[in-house]
Amino acid sequence: MARTSRTFTPEFKLQMVRLFENGKSKSDIIGEYDLTPSALDKWIKNHQNSGSFNVVDNLTDEEKELRKLRKENQQLKM
Image (cartoon, rainbow, N blue to C red; front, top):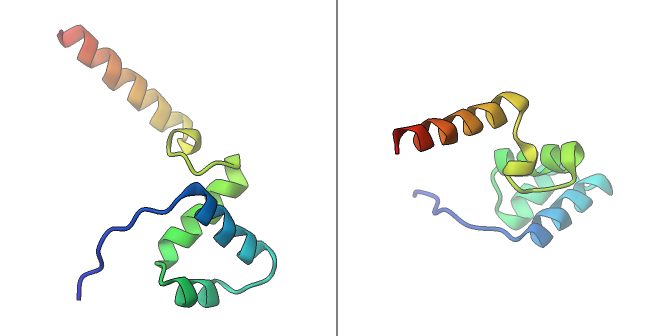
């Protein structure tokens, strides 16, 4: 059965990160809240790196430069 895409609030993500930081195992969190391991890992990593779950706040320098160049390229095309 295919998993449907779900959206989680920043508050929920922070709650999951806090559970992990307070000693609950990743496998327990994943099983209890029906999450994917990659989602939880990403939330933990993003929170540790920037304290934010927004994609823009967690871009690498290369990703930021690529976005900037794409935007500039689009403007030049117009």
